[in-house]
Image (tube, rainbow, N blue to C red; front, side):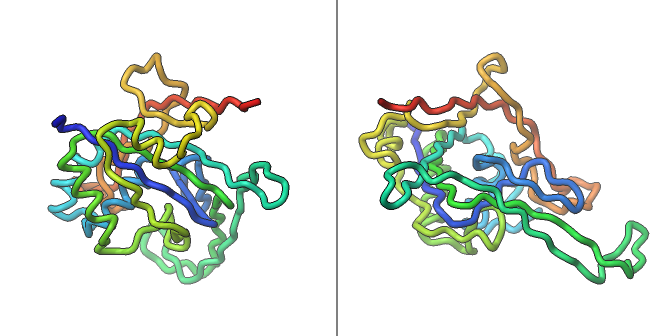
Length: 233
């Protein structure tokens, strides 16, 4: 039996937020799941504390997995058509923050955070079977809670959908008998020329963002290919 396997996940929730370019008080979301967000979800399920020795050991193995995502639209009741995915921007007022000098900031800080509404995605992780088996076991019995980017984004359905020998089997689990060409997909590619965009969501460390040492929170650039779905007549 091959050592390769394919892990199928369903990311279905009323709120999702997949940040990859957030800076300071503005926290945006991508329109599709980020690899850092999905690997972070699995890391939480495994109980890997940020910056810990366990994370240093396991995160590189998880980061080697190849990820593809599939946008699976919801159907609106009565019309039969797809429900559009919308962005929600939420404003927060934060008190008692500290400045870079460490002094207490007497002024309120206003931040904005974006969410996706009514989004649903299938995700397939491909790679070493032993790594995926550990991820699958953790998702079925998580150490810590799992969410879609932020703690307020709770899954509406079980995330784990099965571990398979082929990518086609994983696709069928997520899409039933529907053709993959009907859905917008985001696929990780190794050859730069095959990609259509680059995104800084390849996890290197989930450590402290304010640290300057080896435990600093950091991500590498990942090359992806975005393919719009073909409307079926």
